[in-house]
Image (cartoon, rainbow, N blue to C red; front, side, top):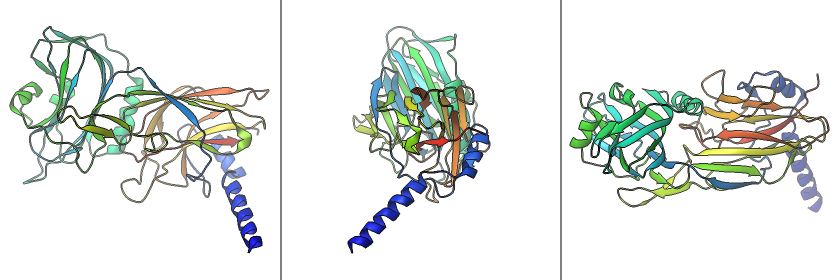
Length: 391
């Protein structure tokens, strides 16, 4: 019996080792692929790769609000979110869908309205503006939304709101027609100098945001069956750094954030009810990541990701966007995948970047900015795959 168990253990160890080694053909496919391309790695992808330990600290950042509960607004007119911001910087992630289907599917407007609750004029300057046209293609919107956010530059325009007055935060919301099942998606980062009330309102096509704010008083309750959460959350930015130096001789490894376990979901407050709110997915939170690595075996390092939780249901696709430091490809924003809308499931993996080993095996640091991709299942592991760059 012991011999059988020993043999089984050796077989398991050998299978695990094999699963962490790419073939010559896979190596060639990775090193010859364009950045953001899908590369098939049959028999390789697994959530059981060794996970690198990391330290995570909270960075100073803006007040962070998200409107995604209820995700689907099922009534014709309602306030789907209400929150209260203090003077300073604000990040507001809006993710709401026109869900009206009773007694019929109708066109709506979904608007973000900001009201000055202070005693002096409120001055607002947009730092980052990401606004997508309403669509039923949630993957494209989530992917493009992050790309637009990462690429956004601060505006020089200063808008003024009188005490007690209100303004539609995103002018596009006054013009956009939101059809049934279409998503309104925006990431807004701005600075204000007076306290303000923030509302997400669904209304008819003729009513402006400020008018809707005066007329519509019913605030929908949270804790719906769908949506990541809503409210004010105490964390907007993380700094993540690996605890040790990864060596390519270790074989394939992974870094996993936004899994709800090792990296718990952020807690906040639903300000209307006063209830504690959970941000399931940590969507809209920025992870500034430093990955330390070296190569004592002369191999390069391919950074890849994949849709680890595809189950044939709504999780059957993933579309992400990251900011990566320079490697084989230039530093900057990369949509993943870059050559098609989504990646589906194993054996598909996406090439993020390829890094060259230093001549003497010295330690290097990879810098990434990651945010959990909206509309996709989590986690989306970052894979570190040793590759032979020699021709």
